[in-house]
Length: 250
Image (cartoon, rainbow, N blue to C red; front, side):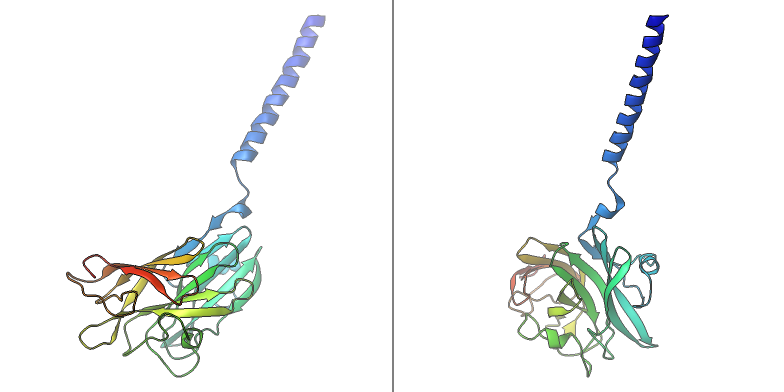
């Protein structure tokens, strides 16, 4: 009887230890939700306002980057029936930290559709532009950078890449990224598809229509049909392209 009682106590303690160990393993395997990280996000532009909650904006499934409990979203505001302006917003633990709608406030069709964030002080936004209009646009941030304006013409949608202060949303500097028609020198379409950062340089992968630009900003000589898969490696301050390449182009 004494032996049976001790055995029962032993089995009870053993069963409890197994349960506690199983709970511990489950806890270790399942990282907390706030620990997720998304460095790069490129996608379709969605519309939202600075008054929207994070839950409302997140439900739109637009581009966003995450680091811990912080998230940055990008999109556009429909300010008239024919005009859109870009909007960029940051939340910390669901609380709005900042929201910027003043990057481009002209009649240009400006939309945000891409982000890269290293979780620290390196944050880039990707925006579209369809031409230069009177008023405040990204040209005021692009002085001294690789391309300072949309260029000649209007209509084709090109990209603007902006380095943003993640603490307050201010644009530090920006560059336009466009292609160029060799026939008349007018600006042609370019769509950014991916951003990556190695600690020094920003690599941009894009679709470029006839004809992508070389590192010296001049149009390449290409064969075959467009769009071309185009890669440009920028210095972090966006003043220079170290290399630019596209298949069947030189």
